[in-house]
Length: 63
Ligand SMILES: [Zn+2]
Image 1 (tube, rainbow, N blue to C red):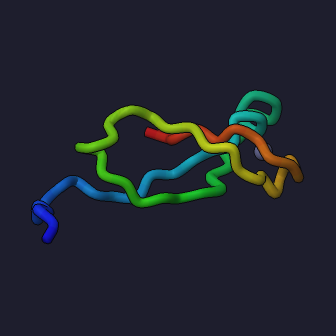
Image 2 (spheres, rainbow, N blue to C red):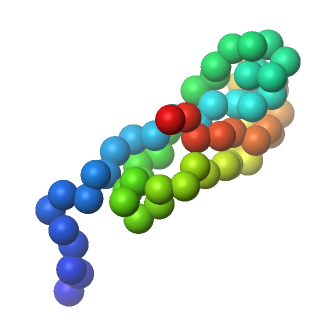
């Protein structure tokens, strides 16, 4: 079975649309995922649909 630790700093991280951020100057947090910051300390990017842009854009993980 798994060798899961009890504490692995698992939490929800927000992903904001980079187009909204660059063009509108607003932070649109469209997606939240749960991830372990211990196993994945680097910031991720996701190609997701932004309801503000009405298209798929790059979403970057917020700190
Ligand atoms: Zn957007």
